[in-house]
Image (tube, rainbow, N blue to C red):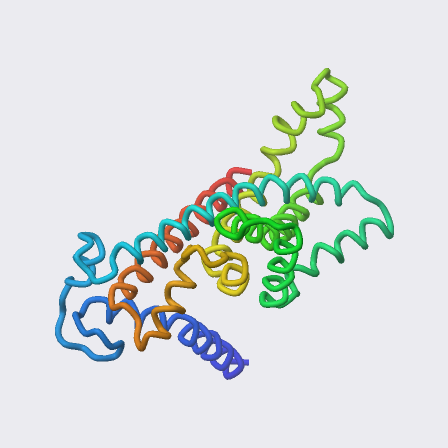
Amino acid sequence: MKASRVISKAYLWLVLIILYAPIAFIAVFSFTEAKSLGNWTGFSTALYRNLFTGSMQNSSALLSALENTLLIALIASLVATMLGTVAAIGIFNLKGKKKATMNFLNNIPMINPDIITGVSLFLLFVFLHISQGYTTVILAHITFCTPYVVLNVLPKLSQLNPNIYEAALDLGATPMQALRKVLVPALRPGMISGFILSFTMSLDDFAVTFFTRGTIGLDTLSTYIYADARKGGLTPELKPLMTIIFLIILAVLLIINMRQSKSSDKQ
């Protein structure tokens, strides 16, 4: 029994090390001026200074890609959260085979490989004669983010007492008022989880963005890094940028988990 516990703990730590070692590696080497990753030339914050002062080479291109990435992710996540919440309510209220069918259809975009989604959307936009750029990228990101919101909101609907919504209607609330004042507060944890997951998926996406951005020079971080790597190496300032993004996401997740744990303790 003791040996199995030791083995299970060792396995868990091994998995955690494999997952987080590359991130820690990038974070450590963001504090040196070496251009190539893995070459330590002494402690320095020069890469961080270059990133924030804009004194790096191609700084405008990198900052533009970062701005595009954050803007697209924010808009796509907000719209996907609204659409996904409404879709989850609709699916939850279905019965029998209709509900099973809609759940099945909702799962397909998540299982479908990104490259197939990207090519399909590219062909759709060409067929509809929609000029590729910001609009098509945002629409594409909303398309693959919405099912994740549905998946996060549905469990919260299952935990909700259905009589609360009906009671609000009986007391004179309109369906929109009942949705806004009764359902949304109850579903907020699932909506927040869906928003964060959508935001992260949008930040991370490459294939769908690559096929739907067109040829107008629109770059996100993923497409910028791809183009940068093809030139023969990555911009050194990407190391501190990736470290900062990871720390921000980690801080947001810790804050949300702490708030959820406090609210569950109060209940």
